Image (cartoon, rainbow, N blue to C red; front, side, top):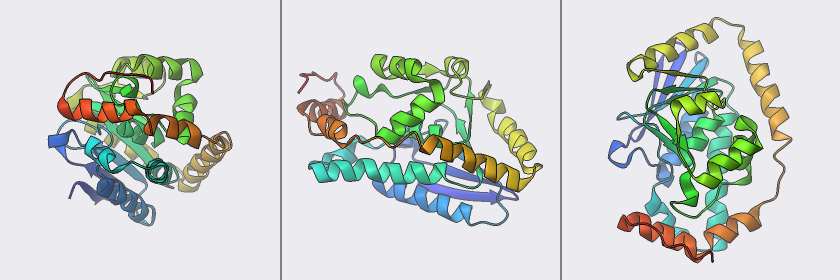
Length: 255
């Protein structure tokens, strides 16, 4: 299985494991990830869910080959809404969610990390949304909002417009990750955090999570289908896909 679930007492681990593709997500994997969230939320004993990647990296985002089947306006909007459903389900979990970030957390993997309650990164990890220099597409309005909520508009602009990847230390400095630890200590550190959370009042944890989610949700009522279609229906997006698969720099035309 490319997405597996392991439960040990009150702590569960959701592992995305497709290391040959840096854990890039296929549509089927997104569906499996959603089902993992559903099953863990219904598990009476689980208090904390750790989201991680196998093979020493987090999640690289959506498998670029999946975009080859996204051609029409309807397919484009359906793709972004599909991701919104998956990321939104993770964000709505009643369990505390922790992203264990090693290697790269980029694109869709970055937004999955953003939807977690807590983020801990290994030294050497890199995080960002480099789509302005790679694919020429965009995020959904909800994911733009999650980024702005996490780091503020000025830093969100910097991250998106420069298309740079942040080091784990830089991500911590702007509040994007809670702590940076050596890679060999990451799992142990998260175990300690999870154990601490499991000692606290469960209803207080659940209500606090949901209260914060509701506050943020009210700020996300932004219509953006026109912006999504402007990118995904462009020649530049098709060029971005071709260039990525051909392993060459894209040639942007702005149309």
